[in-house]
Length: 413
Image (tube, helix red, strand yellow):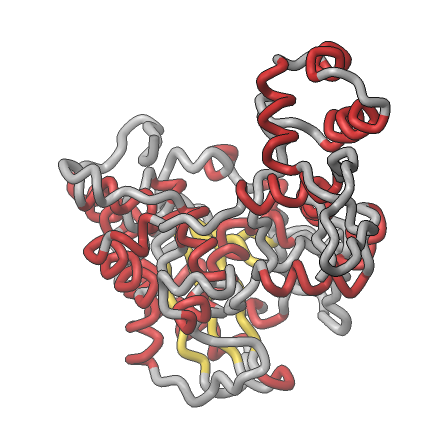
C-alpha cells in the first residue's frame, strides 16, 4: 500500500481548516479525491496531526533528498552534513536506519551478492519517520477511569466538551488528575478506533453528529416571506442603550422554534444577563392571542426586577404586543428587530440552537407537554455557560436575586 507523506496530509488538513471542501483540499495537497474523503472520514472530520510545521530537529524531505544526492555522488558523511547544515552524526544515524539494497537488485540463487553501493530512498525514509511520529499513544481518558466516567456523565447531560473541561476545574478544584482539554474530548468522540468514550455519546453534542463538519462558507438565505406588518411596532433602534451591554437584568429575547411542515411550534424566552430560559407551550396554532396568553402567564411569575423588556423579530405572532406589555407589566415594553436580522437577537438564536438537541428539526412539536418543556428548560438552566464564567443560568439568577445590581453594575464579569 502506498504510504502518503505526513506533509501531504498536513497540507490537506490545512485546506480543511481554511474552509475548502474535502475534494478541494485533497487536490490542493496533491492527493486524490478518494484519499482525501477517506482521511476525513477516518479522522471524524478532525485533524489527527498538528497543522504547524514539525520541529526543526527532524530532518525534512528536502534534506533527505539532498542526502540521497550525496550518497549517489559517493560524498563523505561530513560533506553531506555540511551541505544540509546538520551534524555528521545526524546523517550517519539517518543512513544507518534507512540505507539498504536497491529494490531493483535481484541476486542469482546460490551466489554471493557482489559489492554494491548501499541504496537510500528519501521518500521511504520520510515514510518511516512519519510512522514513528504517529505511533499509538495512550490518551488520558483511556488511562483514567474516574475522569472518563465523569466526562461520560456530563456528556449524557448534553454539556459540550468545552463546558465539561471548565466545569471539571470548578467541581474538582484540588484534583489535578480531573483535568482534560475540550479538544481531547472531541478527539475521543470523533476519531474512529480510539474507543475512550462510548460512540453514541457523540449524538448528545449540539451538532448531533459523530464527525466534525467544516463550517459552511455560504450564508443561509434569510427568509420571512408572507409576514404582515405589525401595528405600532417599536424598532430595536429605540431600545434603551442599557440593554446592549447587559448591565441591567430583566431584558429578554424571544422567538419561536418551528416543527415539521411549519405546523407546530414552541416559544422561547431567554434573559440577556443570566441566559435563563423560559419555554412557552403552544400546542395549537401560533396565533397572536395564544402567544400573548402564554407570555403573560409565564412572565407574571417573575419578580419585578426581571420584567423590563422583550426583543422579538417581526413575526405576526406578536401582533398583541401592546396587550403583553400592559398585562405582563413590562417596564420598557417590547421591541422588534429589523427585517432579516437574527443577529440582533443573538442570545436567543444561540439558545434555540441548544434547544434543537431536544427538539430536532423536522419533528412534530405539538406532542410535547408543558411539563416536558419545563424539564428541558431546567436542563438548559443547569448547563454551565462560558459567558457566565462557567456558572449555570440558575446560579447566575440566584446570585442576581440575592444581591441585585445597583447603579447599572453588570451581573457577569
